[in-house]
Image (cartoon, rainbow, N blue to C red; front, top):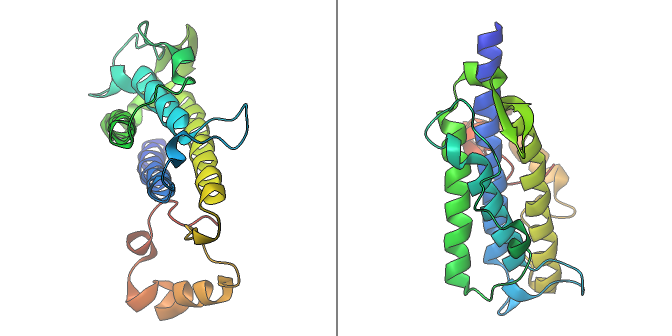
Amino acid sequence: MTPADLAAHYLTDVRERMRGVKRLGDGALAQLPEGGWHTPLGPDGNSAAVLVQHLSGNMHSRWGALRHGYRTGAEGEHPGRNRDAEFEDAGRTEAELRVHWEAGWAVFLAALDHLEPDDLTRNLTIRGETHTVVQAVQRQMAHYSGHVYQLVLLAKTLRGTDWQTLSIPRGGSAAFNAERMGAGGRGPQGVPEAEHDPGLTRSR
């Protein structure tokens, strides 16, 4: 595999995995009970509303300049961003918060989709600190995944016994493995695994 092939493979994998992370977040948000959007787990915790505000604000700031492709001199901290306000519950409705959620992910995923393999070693800055594009992508993959798993924990705790798992259910690993490894390892009914369950819809 050439370096160019490896870079293209990396971008394909990142796009698929981060769409999977979004689906995981979608599944968690869909199970929040009534009033759950604004309920933290503790006095210093973040509610789902706050996490959505922060993710959306970060995604717009970090990736807005690259939404239509790499741009020389891009800065990942938009001067108009008010990060501190993202951590204050603004009392938005569920509908408003879903708009923020979708809009933030749209910016981030569009930026990933427009990156080319050669862009990965080019530079951008975040708060004036120089990063290669691949470093910025890795940094935000970890950041966004962490907050989405916070959303999962929050929604699961608030939902209680009514929670519907987004992963392999307890006691279901053997059946899941048998299903996946059946039909010559191509998943159920011979469907390739990537088509059957792309990304991170199920945690391993």
